[in-house]
Length: 118
View 1 (cartoon, one colour):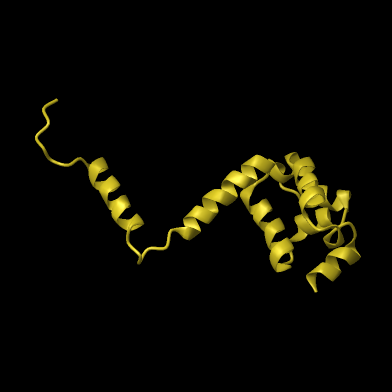
View 2 (cartoon, rainbow, N blue to C red):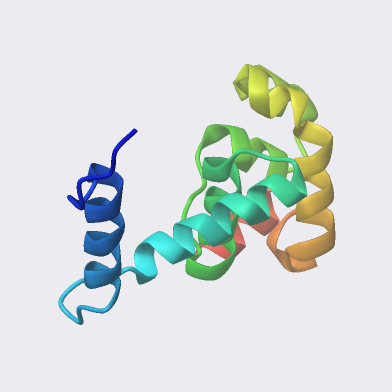
């Protein structure tokens, strides 16, 4: 292959990426935060949206939805009934995360969850 000195599409894309990264008008912190969340979810063995729901429940006191609320209320039958296939397969990891990282007063019964959400 003879190189004629012209830029390849990849070269132009990499140059543009560097320009955007150095341009103050573009905020890449959201992308960095999402990558970190994906890595954390993978490390804990759960889906990104599941970990995000738990974090929003913990930090922002947002209702996490039916499945996670059942987990937090310690209602195994309801959690299994509300789980999608992936969350069902990851239920042990989700419960371990709740047990090890969420404040004890924020989970364990319907009353504890309701009080946390106030």
